[in-house]
Length: 401
Ligand SMILES: [Zn+2]
Image 1 (cartoon, rainbow, N blue to C red):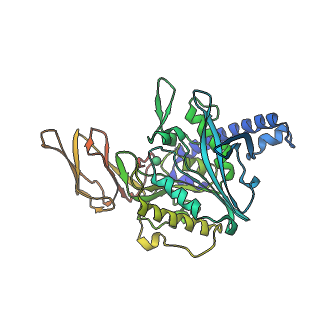
Image 2 (image 1 turned 45 degrees about the vertical axis):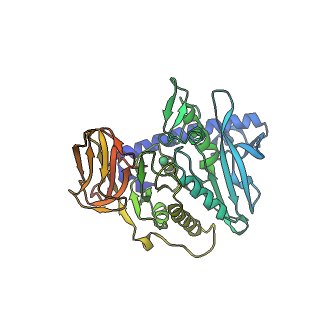
Image 3 (image 1 turned 30 degrees about the horizontal axis):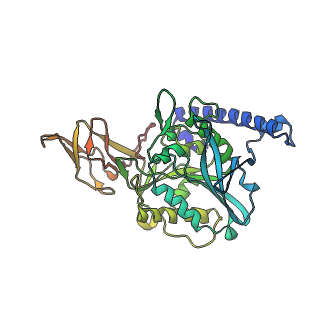
């Protein structure tokens, strides 16, 4: 991943630090498992050096689905679909959070793709995209395997809210997409859940990975993909989607797709419109793009569908944020995907008397990629994100998600 050094020294340092952390916790996990199973054919030292934990069935069956605490898709019957539950972290009452795992195991060997959704609990079109893709796959015709986890942050999904409600100091709300790659011995349940899932389920089964998202409650976005186009494998995948925008940026550590990138697995994040709803038309574009990715990797045969070229995709490397400076009701003067010029007025805001208290203008020329959809705003709320091309992109980009 020497390509990534372009994004700066800070990021490389973080990358090295996180690699060291993952290695240590994976080694610890492998050692514990070998001792418990008493069936290891390798020495403890060799097991500790093996990053692939294999498959561990807990013996539990929930609603007809077997439960695993670790999975190697190579252990599953080829030419079939498999439905499993992954055993995540425990709840305060001692039961576990289980995540839904779908595996389409091809009849023939090949590349292994991982699809995830539900890292944020209020996002629905991403879940439906992953389900639709999995329903279209016929394992008998596949060369390779696709594994999907649709509800990564289960308690957040259960309450259809962005963040995981954990029992820290009273109730804390933790954003799971700042926790990756997690830590099996971490200080919070979501950190441990992320560690268990990344070490024992996601990383061992991924040659490439796609973490699907949407906008968030109160803030909707266009159809776009986020990823670093300086990494050739990522660029190739991003360009296979017939969606209007690409945000060419590595964003920041802690997001799931960067945890994959940091261990050498090409990965990116699609963003599929508004939270809380299903956008069937937009979903179909991401299904088409994802099937293109499978064809690109030889997992699925057949002609490519439409790609970014067919929709004249707009590529930017930075998102210009417009933050509310006042409280009041916001009226947008432009729509998602509109092109705007520097200095163009994009929104106004009125106080409770109906007086205009703020006018917001774009500082750049670009395309609208996200807008606050809740009409009321207080100072500091992001109102608009404008995708544009920055000559020298800096680190620590904010981005709409
Ligand atoms: Zn999200």
